[in-house]
Length: 160
Image 1: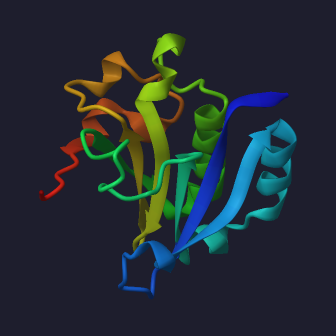
Image 2: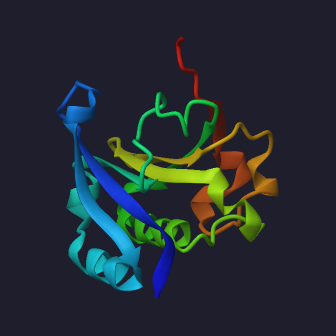
Image 3: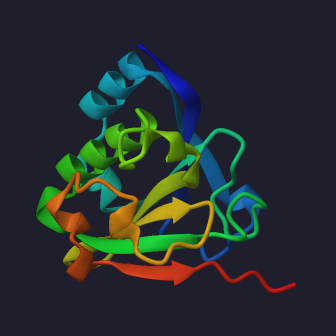
């Protein structure tokens, strides 16, 4: 099955303090569900615990300055270290198949999904094109990690 849009998974080293475009690496591109199956079979927990990964719609760069991100926000939540691979892959699949928003006509509101490791957990973010007041009116509950009480919405602030 072909996806509506291609999605690009970017990698950024946790040891790299530079946030220039050159510090990101295109890691994987999803065009169809076969790509997803290959990725799911290949990715290991230790990969996700030792790097930052950014799944973005093709053409959107994973920083706040990108024009598609600058007026939006991020919905942040924690994923426990022991379930990172399962939760990451589940949420990634819902993103690339445009099945994470309640209203399928709003699928363009989601720009991406990222994960960054911490000691005992991972910080995950859903990158939204526009600012959101209450994300539960917009998002499906595809993961126990996405419960309203455990999430925080932060507007992207771009200095001009």
